[in-house]
Every structure is written in structure tokens, then in C-alpha cells.
Length: 259
Image 1: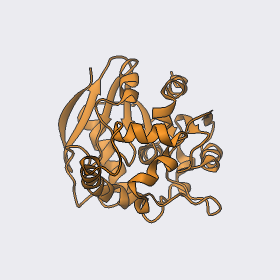
Image 2 (image 1 turned 90 degrees about the vertical axis):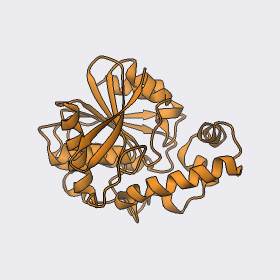
Image 3 (image 1 turned 180 degrees about the vertical axis):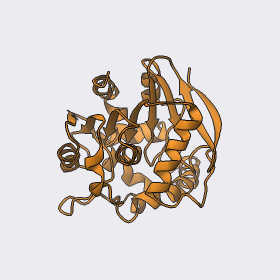
């Protein structure tokens, strides 16, 4: 069972989801956030003692104007780990969460020894620009995020019409709050100097990428692999940026390589 809890950090209250038993694992979510009923979180909690903190501005986590840039978010997330009493958990991050996880492993390389980056943001390749997430309309997101846009749209909306105000209005309100935080890291491009620090990562690292990722395409997987010493790349067929949704079992198997 996954339950919602709250802890206090120097930058305010943080909501987190916790469940399962086994080795400690921290999951850092992407720009779209996460929910307690996520099948991916359930899969993680079936094998690990899962902690999934919400970024500032997501869920019930307080937003804080003092969290302004990548370093602030990185140190804040270390404060979250300290408040949870965790020491060297397996660190898993998806998309924006992968960007934060990579920064954590680069800034304090002796504090993270097992790292899984899933379709991580954080690098920039001029010849393969990342789509501007902030300019996309809700109806445009499935084609960018999923290998199968039709199934992806059904997953996003829980089979409600994306133009239905019952879906659209809450979605836009929630996104406005969440993307205010994400924009500090991803807008106008998701490049905050990671390329100059990534060589510091010492953690055993597994990279997981969907073959059909249109948000952070395959060349970024190769760039992360080349930059992190000893990194292993797991390419997942029939999966896009939301590989954690479309191919959960394959992602779990990849994380399992970390022990």
C-alpha cells in the first residue's frame, strides 16, 4: 500500500509517497508529476521500500521562492533525503526527475552509488532540440510523450475527452502551478550546466530510454552514456518518453540491474 505523508525541510513542507519493503529507493518524478495510484509506483513498492517526494509546487509540497535554480533544487532534494533519514538509497529519476538525480550524483558523487536515469533531461544537443513542453497544448502531448498516442491519451485522461471542461480546466490549473516550478529548470531549454559536471558521477548508472522517445530522443541517451563512466544503456522498444507507463516491466528489469 502506498500512502501520502509530509515532512518538514528547511525550504518548507514536502509531501511524499511511501510504500513497500526492501532496499530503499527514491523516485523523482517528471514535469507531469505523479499520483499515488500510479502502476509504476506500485511496481516499485512491490520490490523496494519506495519514497517518492513531490517537487516544490507539486502535490501538497510547498512552493518556495528561494528555490530558484538547479543548485537550489539539488540541495533541497538532499535535504528531503536527510529528513527521511535515508543514506545512499537507490536513486531513480524520470525526465525532469532524472535531470535532478543526475545533478545530485554529480554534485555529491560519494553520496549516490546506484543511479537510474529514465529518459532524463539536462543535456542539450543543437542538432536534436528538445520540444518546448511549455508551448504544447494538452491535445498535443500524447504524440510527444507516448509511443502509442491513442493509448497515451486514454491514460492521461482516464478515457475522458481532452476537450471536456471537466478534464481540461483542472488539468490546466494543475499544470500552471506545477510548470511554474518546472520552468525554472526546463525553460527555455533544459541545460543548466550538467555537461560540465556530469563527469563527476561515480555511481553505478543504468540509463533507460524508450526507442520512440520524441521528447528527449535517442541521441540524448547516447550523450549520457558517453558522459558517465561505465553507464549501461537499456533501450526499450515500443515505448516513448513515458516508458515508465508503456513498458513498466522493462523499466523494472533495468532498475533491477542495480541490485
